[in-house]
Structures are given as C-alpha cells and as structure tokens.
Image (tube, rainbow, N blue to C red; front, side, top):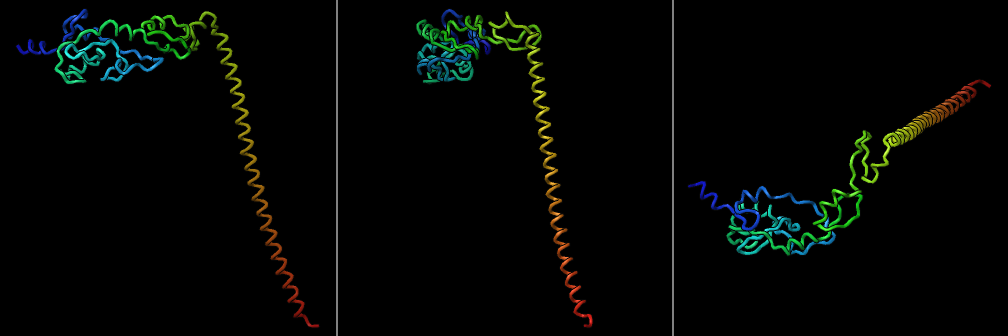
Length: 227
C-alpha cells in the first residue's frame, strides 16, 4: 500500500510523452549553452533557472511555464507551483506555438572562429557541419585545425615551422642571457671602480693629514734648535 500511495503522489505529464514521471525523467535533456543574439522576452524565461525556457512544460492547473528538468527537480521537493504555490500534480507539454517561437530564436554559433547566426532549431545540425570547428590534427602534430584547413595541412611543414620558431626563440633567449650577464658584470666593475675611488680618496686624505702633521713636527723641531 505504501508503494502505491507513493506512486500516486508523483507528478505525471499528460500528452505524448507518457503518463508516469519515470517515463519523463528518462526523456529529460541537458540544456545547451546558447549565445542568444538578443535577450529573450521575460515571459519566455524559466523562473526557476532564470534562463531561456528549454524543453518547456506547464503546470496544468495554473499554466505556468518552466523548463522540464527544472520543474521536475522542483516537484521532487515540493508539490506546489514554484510561482503561485498552487498544488501541482499534472504537467503538460507547452503549446506548439511557444515551442516554435523558441526554436526560431537566433543564436550565435558556439565555435570561437565562426560568426554564423542560426536559429535554435538549426544549431545542432550547423555545429555538426560548421567549417570553423577546431580539432586536433589526427596525423600526430597535435595542431588545432579548422575543418577547412585539414585537407591542405602538412604536419612536416608545421613541425619545421615550429622548429624554426624554437631556434629563433632560443637565439633570442641566448642573446638576452648574454646581455643580462654583460649588464651584471658591468655593474660589478662599476661597483669595484667606485669602491677603489672611495679608497683612493681615503688614502689621499690620510696622506694629506700625515703630511700636515709631519710638517708641523718639523717646524716645532726647528723652533727648538739653538740659533
């Protein structure tokens, strides 16, 4: 009896997708990441995730629209509408006009190097055939290539180019290291020269002081000698 009561409390969806919640759960799809050309009207966003409605369904008693996955997860925790808190038991497919409107919204191709704009309905097929999709070279050089580049791509030429770049960069690094070493040596020489100049000044001052004292002693001795 307990299991039967539990099943009776589950939300069910009327319409073409089956009547049991388990049947609909298996039919839930992950939301794609759309780059919409223009922000969607607020009435076409899901109040649970605040994103554009995806695979929309509505609560039959109040007609509020939500993403199928969002409201299914919600109803596992609460048997009420997320917006008006009306008791919610049945879900139904959103009407065809709404689904057609959503399917015809314009989006950017998700590929970085593609500037194409297509509808949501066209996007999946466009991505499969998009010539601006980047993939790793399958021949071994592991370069990212556009579909349009694969036919004429030469791994050997690419590797030669990379080797030349590495040699050039290696020479640049060596020159930079040499310049750094020369600058460091020049600094050491300048510091030593400055130290020697300071020592010379100290010695000259000491010598001058000694000479002055020596002259003073000579004068004192001369003054003490009998005339």
